[in-house]
Each structure stands twice: as structure tokens, then as C-alpha cells.
Amino acid sequence: MKLVTGASSLNAFMKKTGLKKKELAEMTGITLSYAYMLCEDFTTRASTIERLAVIMGTCPEQFPEYEGEPQEFPEAVYWVQKKVRQSELSSLEFIKKFPQKRRLEVVDFLRGSAPLPLNYSFFDTVTTALDVLPEELFVFVAKEIKNLLANRGVEEGALSSAIESIKKYYL
Image (cartoon, rainbow, N blue to C red; front, side, top):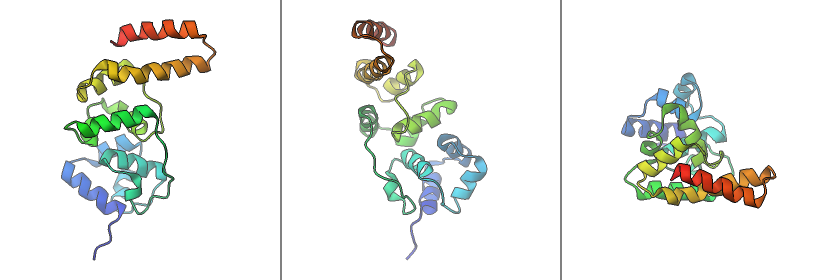
């Protein structure tokens, strides 16, 4: 009986999807030489395994090498993950919809370690790729912006005005 390891799972996934080691390195924030090493010996940090799990559309606990703690994700992460599952796209296909230089940011958002990106490019790519109404995603954008501004001492009236102005731009 062959032992299933992170390296064997990763290699099988890469073969099945045609994912190149260079793409893997870019999406996980590691060097190309480290990507080669992962395919042989899967000893790595929990954060790298979490990124790999996002790309592979699985959970990090599926890897015997993972020693991280299960975590709660922000509501926006759950919503996007749910929409990806409901779409015709795999996690990898969804991530590849974004410009190459933004993919690590998307992976980190999907693993719950980065906030919802507030740039319009991210917003537009999500709504287009997942075929969702912009208003559905804007709910989360508005919450994120409101929290950012409130934490900086912006008063409620100004918050509402700011959200309305941003809403006009996004929608």
C-alpha cells in the first residue's frame, strides 16, 4: 500500500490540471526551486500548505504534513468560496482569472489570511468570473470599507457618504 503524502497529492494535481511549477511558485509566494523541492519532499510551513490547499480546492487538513489549526474565515471568504463551488470553475481556474501578479493576494484572501481586496479590478474579476451581481459582492466591500474608516475615527455620517460615493463607482 502506497502512503499518500502531500508531495504525491501535489504531483497528481499538477499532472491532472497541467499546472506548471512556475505558476505554483507564483500562486503560493515561494521560489521556483522551492516548488521543485515541494514536489519531492513536502516539508513546509503551514501557510504554504494552506495556500496549496486553496489552489487545489481542498482543505489543509487533507495533508498529513499539516499541523495548523482550523480557523474561522471572514464572511466574504465563505461567500466567494461558495460561489466558486457553485460555478463551473475549479479553485485553480478561478485563481487563474486574475492577473498573474495578483494571484498570491487572491490565494491569501481565500485562505482567510488577507482582507477582502478593495480594488475595482478584484471586484470586477470576481463578479465576471462567478457570474454574480455586483450588488451581491458590494455588500462585503461596503462592510470592509466601513470597518476600515470607522477604525480610523471617521464619523457615521461621513461613513455613509463615503460608502454611497464608492457604491456609485463600483456599481
